[in-house]
Amino acid sequence: MPMPMLNNLIKRTKKYATANPEAKKAGIPEGMYLKCPSCKKSVYKPDLKVQLGVCPQCSYYYPLSSRARITAVTDKGTFIELDKELTSGNPLDFPDYEKKLESYITKTDQKEAVITGIAEIEGQKTVIGVMDSRFMMGSMGSVVGEKLTRAIEYATEYELPLIIFTASGGARMQEGIFSLMQMAKTSAALARHDENGLLYISVLTDPTTGGVTASFAMLGDIILAEPGALIGFAGPRVIEQTIKQKLPEGFQRSEFLLEHGMIDAIVKRQDMKETLGRLLKLHQKEGK
Figure 1 (spheres, rainbow, N blue to C red):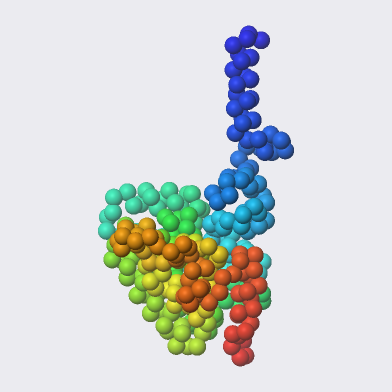
Figure 2: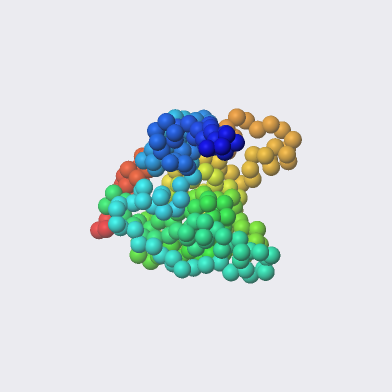
């Protein structure tokens, strides 16, 4: 073999080994490790899946897809999806909005930033809605609001408890006032659910901000949160720039909100199913 060709081969081998030391050591294919954004250590992807998206080194919480979260908290084989085919239009003719929606549909393999349905948790039938931050940062457009409202109304009609997992950057700017209207629509539906003496549990995950926080996220009879979740209306940087002051350490994180009485409890992801099941059993209506 000519020497220049041999040198090129050696260089490529060294480059691969440097980029993936764990993969080379264990004989694992490329792309099986992630670098944790918190502790900066390598995390083996299959281990992360077993840990429900929690870093085994530092307990950093990776975002969970809607379907992964549904699998984690509901009894196997009980989930029935509602309004699966609802998709967003472009009511304001916002430039390239349709293309952006298509790209997220392809990327996430779901039609919108929330999945709703009926399921059982520890044997207790409930209606559940799970937002997904991977789809346009979980922003709330008219379809997100419509799917959640229909789920709430279904829970009201059939006298079922309701659980919503929030993960959102707030209202979707591409839909303007149509997006903001969803705050009132979801809140009104929840008021009717409450008037019927039915339980609503809100579970706040990272991040829960903007119009979602200002509406259905904070209306739960019981409000739970995952550890370290960012929860607020405006983000910390926006607030600091507005008031020209440094915010307290951990401001707007779930631990800060628990200390100040804004939420009821912080629940680890591994304990979420058991906690929800226990709450549903405690609030079970007679004869159900």
